[in-house]
Image 1 (tube, rainbow, N blue to C red):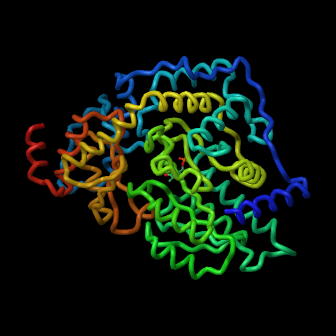
Image 2 (image 1 turned 90 degrees about the horizontal axis):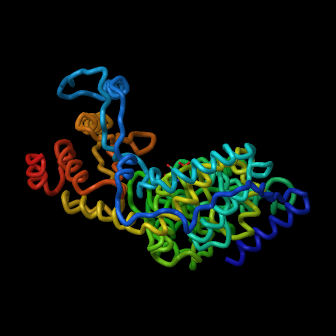
Image 3 (image 1 turned 180 degrees about the vertical axis):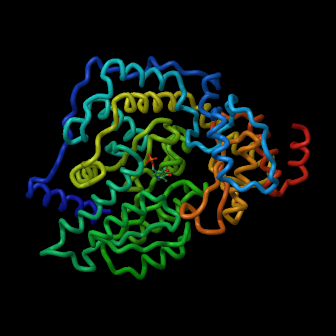
Amino acid sequence: MALWDQWVEAALVKLASKNLLRSTRPISLTPAYFPADEVETFDGPRQWDRSSVEVEMDERAFREWLSELPDPGGESIAKDENVSRKLLLFSGNDYLGLSSHPAVRKAAAKAAQEHGMGPRGSALICGYSNYHMLLEASLAELKNKEDCLLCPTGFAANVAFMSALGSICSLLAVGGRPSEDQKIAIFSDALNHASIIDGIRLVERQQEAEVFVYRHRDMVHLNALLSCCKMAKKVVITDSLFSMDGDFAPISDLVELRKKHGFLLAIDDAHSTLVCGENGGGLLEVYGYESDVDICIGTLSKAVGCLGGFVACSNKWKQLIQSRGRSFIFSTSLPVPIVAASYASLVVARKEKWRRTAVWSRVDDFNALTRLNITSPIISLVIGSEKAALCASRHMLESGFHITAIRPPTVPPNSCRLRITLSAAHTFEDIKKLVAALSLCFVFPAADQNAQIASKL
Ligand SMILES: Cc1ncc(COP(=O)(O)O)c(C=O)c1O
């Protein structure tokens, strides 16, 4: 890794020589409300948790949605314009149900009362405050990294990292356009999130990188591509928990390959942050690999239950991203109530460990009832054609479940699916009902058992 440290240092020196190094100057918002020890926590689910999984839809919106979905049976649902539909949400990313926690609500409300939305401007102008600084410190601690940089969203965090990465090539290129071997070789999993892909496209467009897409989770393919590549500046980037398939990156193999090839390893921990690891530190905490992965990107919009993105990294990388990361520099920073709520959410997640246990118990429940072997709270039931997936989605909607069909371009053609997500706010009863309804449009290995469940409901 010493080489990457040298390149980042050299890029920073170049930036300093051009007066292009940027830093944030926090505005002090007083009185500051930083709930830490006084946050009220609970030893198990309470009624408010249900509001993160129980939603309502007015009849018109419900019917409009249905009208977009094919109706194989030509069934017509009784029409009552004044009724609002109650749906059980199995499509959100609020894996721990923290979005509705009283401490999160209170932090947002208190910050809004004291400061409104806070100064509106990008972080480098006036949008960065003592609240943002504290949240960054808390995320750096969670991820066991030296530092952290908040971004407006997780999407922006990936794009900011990529544009800063690409800038290393331009800054260090001797004389004009970088030569082929001065460029950065980016190795990216075929199923990486759209924000990684768009970030890579930006860097490619600047002619700062060559891109090598390796087959999903295929380490033999990745090793072969790395071995053939003569470029010095190699980077591997992958989702840690894949958002559409619900499978994990082979992190141990990646760490081994990093030792062999000396690449910079960046992971997008959007879906495993707070979900995996004893303290919710994500996939790296599970394996103790925090120092084997250089850059850890994340979002506050999933298990944290709020909004925002971050890059947990070294001080030097932070300096580079805040000086060159375009989606960080040229976008307004997060409003203070969101920052305060995210901070409270991290405090709650640290204390209410039962939430992590609960979401994994729902994974076990789903496996026990279906005899599938899902490995995370993201369930990907591949149905096949677009029409079949839309029919399945219609059936689930009519049965009272908010579940969407995922179609191209999000997933490849003929691998259309239902994406179902589990939360700590779901109960065993919810999972039983879900499986019973699903068993009428999807064949599980334990079909007999499912039919029995369906008949009991
Ligand atoms: C793997 C991954 N990375 C990044 C993002 C973007 O995060 P955000 O919603 O905060 O922009 C998502 C969201 O869908 C995601 O699934």
